[in-house]
Image (cartoon, rainbow, N blue to C red; front, side, top):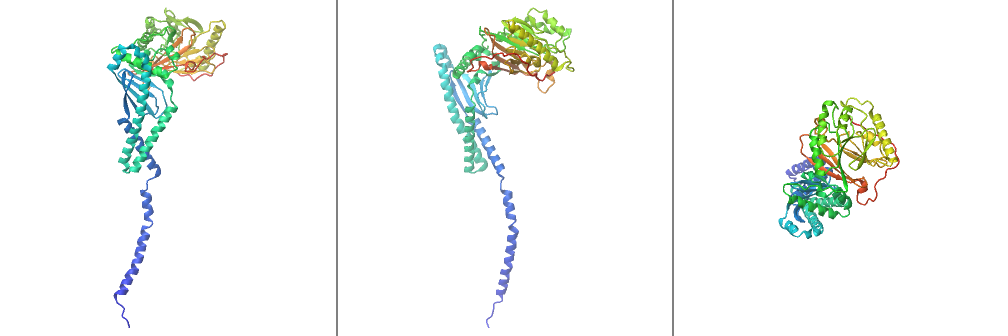
Length: 528
């Protein structure tokens, strides 16, 4: 009989015992593996968000470090750069004189052009050979095109390099880094396509000035030249460069504005509210722009008392005619005081008068609410006043002496003149604005030339000081253009001037608006 080794059953028993152990171990690990995988797998939207952040930050860093070019433009050395922006546009920095801002395009990138310095050799060549100015336009166009092309190439390299380098540093995977670089390039290409699709060459006709440049209206020429020379964008750009060159050539003074003899200039002010600083600002604008007449659309005073009348005395020293209508903070006492001044023309009840070649008609505000707590008649009273002004305008037109400009303090009253006059001026709301009404009349509302007076301290930020220069054709008496002037309010020292053209004077327009038969327009909400 064969003998069975004693160790065999023991080994067999241990082998059988191991089977359930591994099964239990497998069973214990099996449900844990999916939980571990789900916990460590990144969510798709987080991964996409992280990649987007890497692309944007890397592209931005690339543009900051590499994405600019130094390019000569005519006699000047400039630096061109692309910068991320929510509004797009072009900013031309003319250090230390200030900056010009153009609404040239809508894209998430802004073109910055920094005028670094005037090249002495090229500038002297223009002085020695003035005949070269005739070819400056072509030279400027060529320089700008070359600089823009170089900037586009360098910007592409900058954003791809920046995004790729940052992607490699964050992910440490070449494939992911190259993906970031490719997305950055696609983003820049999309931004360029958007800028090209929204490119507006007419933006050079309506620049916004800041800094000392706001004191130099001759930088882009007078209103008539802008209207008649709009056809070629490059010509305006070349003229801009030429005039900036002249600015640099004069180290201590800005060029004097040479008014077009065929243009009438009207300074529109409103809502001075007893701010004594306003008179100095008005006098400066009169001198700088060679103003022919000032129009004040009311609220010159704050309470309209006789004790305030002395505040009006500087009007006598402004040196130009002053057309005035009563606001809801101006009393009849204020009106009678101004009527005794020689150079002041008070308009009320639809009275019409020709001043400085333009025919004005106006009406005083029917309400007197200096404490701003009561409104006796509300909008209904303003509408009646506007209807009286419209009736007077209609009568003047029937008599063959139509008014060129109507004036009312309240926008509700001003709107009632729609269809009876080409332009109506108003104020009251302490912010500027322009609107062409339904029947062709342009309503131009002025902000507060006094920075809201004592009300400047009522809000978190002081109200700006605003005024406008209106340019009229001396023959047709139609509005050609206007400059909206905005100065920093109490405690601020900022300045901005933006030029605007009526639609009929925009490039491509052939005829101006006509005033159809009168109808009543819907009133706008009034404010105290």
